[in-house]
Image (cartoon, rainbow, N blue to C red):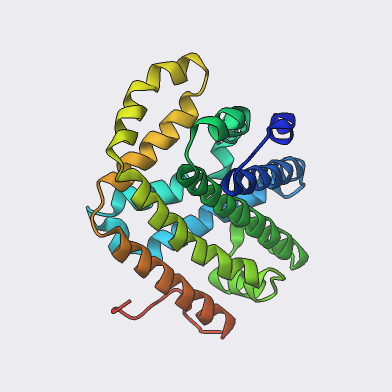
Length: 249
C-alpha cells in the first residue's frame, strides 16, 4: 500500500538503507502471502510453533522476571495474523523515521523486520511442505513437523533466524535502557492517536515495558539461543524427542 513511500525516500546512512531494503522485501512478501492459497495454514503453523516454544521454554515463560518479555516476543513479534495495520504504518512513516531517528534505533527496527520476514517465509515453506505430504495443518504432529523441517530448502535461514533472536534481543535490551525513550513514548501517545498510529505506538510501548522490566536479559537470550540450536540439531539428527532438552539448558 505504501511501497512508493519506501522507494521514494532518500536514505543517506547504511542503517537507513538496510531498513529500507528490508521493508521493501517484507512489503513484497506480505503482498505475495496475502494472496497465497495456504495463507490460513501459515497462521495455524505459527500458532503451533508458538505453543511449542512456550513448552520448550516453559521454565523461562513462567518466570516472573521473563514472562512479559517472552509474551511480547511470541505474541507481538510472532503474530503475523494480527499485525497488518502495524506493518502498513511502519511503511507509511518510514520517511519520517529515517529523518528523525538515530542509526542505532534504525538498526533495532531493521533487526525486528528481518526476524519477522524470515519467520513468516519459513512458516510459508512449512505450509507448502505439509501440503506436498498431504498433512493438514491443523493435524500436524511433532513427527510431521520434523519430517517437513528436514526437507526444508532454507536450513541456512533457519540457522540465521535463531541467531537473529539473540542479536535483536540484545539490541532491544540496550535500546530500552535509554530513559529518554520512555518519556518520548509517554508524550507521543496523543499525537500517535491523532495520526492513526495507535497500533504502532502500542506495539512500541509494549516492547519497551516488557524489556524494561527484565533483569539479566543476556542470560535469557543466551538460553533461548542455546536451546533452539539444540532443538535444531535434534530435529536434523532424527532425535525421537527433539523438543525435550536436558535440565541444565
